[in-house]
Amino acid sequence: MVDEGRGCSDGSGVDCEEAVRQLYVYLDGELTEQRREKISLHLDECGPCAGAADFEAELRVIISKRCKDRVPDTLIQRVAAAIAQERARQQDGS
Ligand SMILES: [Zn+2]
Image (cartoon, rainbow, N blue to C red; front, side, top):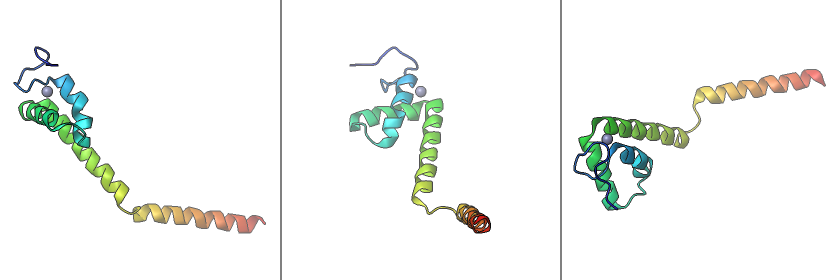
């Protein structure tokens, strides 16, 4: 299967539509080496797609950091305050 003659032609054999579609798989590292090479070649040549890839990659880093990091203190404090409030309300009620 050869993708040629569609979208921008940069010699990678991958057009923008294809590159963007593969971007998620690419960032997940689930592409074959050959496929990765083609996508990264396209990203080298194509500004808009590279920008999209950067954005996606950055977003993923942020998300993965957020998930790995411990819950932020501000959130803990908010939850603690809510629990304390709830407890106080229950003690008042009964
Ligand atoms: Zn492109």
